[in-house]
Image 1 (tube, one colour):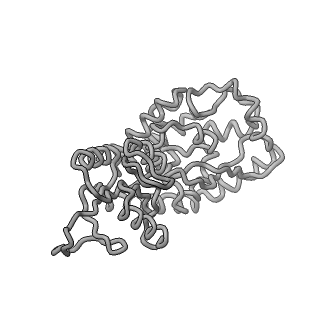
Image 2 (tube, rainbow, N blue to C red):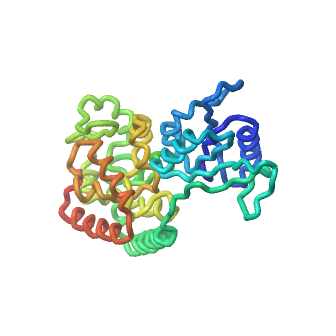
Image 3 (cartoon, rainbow, N blue to C red):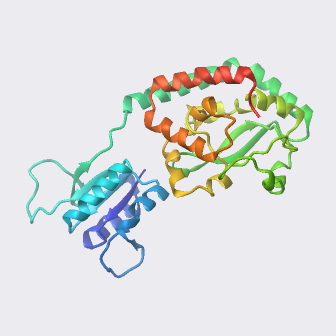
Length: 318
């Protein structure tokens, strides 16, 4: 499902919005209408809000639904390019039919002004690597996973697995799996530890966290508590490599400039984990996540996986 902003809330824009809302099978969801003119009705926002709305709504595409002001159109196209969005426009055909094939929605023709090029083959290979790697690891490490689950249960009361909602791609929540490393009441005790938070920004971590169990400290030191997330990778909710998924309470504290890190599927490990794991700055981690997204390649993923193995063997987890 592609999230869409429609620039132009006149008759054509309203017609496009209503048709897309009535036909979800077309794969587009309208996040809002933008127009600088004074139009009656609610839900119409100013064009200058484009960037903020695009980030907050994880928008993929902008549709210019005339009439078109040249300067405003150029501004929208440039803003969309900076935001890495596709741009399509309803052309004024003066009552004529186009001679070339164009996309149509509700009988309204659309022409493409800008289209982001996605590395489709590379992304397919990334997904194949995720499935093969996660599947093989789950099979080969099944006895180890069973032993760890038993140790967690013997060490403290409660289930072996801890599941919690995390923010996935485009902010969609998913249930993330981990071996439980804390006491069963850890979530209720979290608020009482907020003043000891060592991280800067919307991220929570304290040294010598009293909620962590004895076995939990060992699991965290070697990142063994993350192994159940291989199941999240198989389900397509996570990747082997990508920005780490944050808890929903951390996600709710994001600023608008933090949202681009959710343009991709989160990962079990990432660039931040292998270069600045001990850095307490949330912004430093954010910058590394954005750098990963912009520089991504399969080769980069493989290098991060190799570096992750070295970090894990050193036992530098907390």
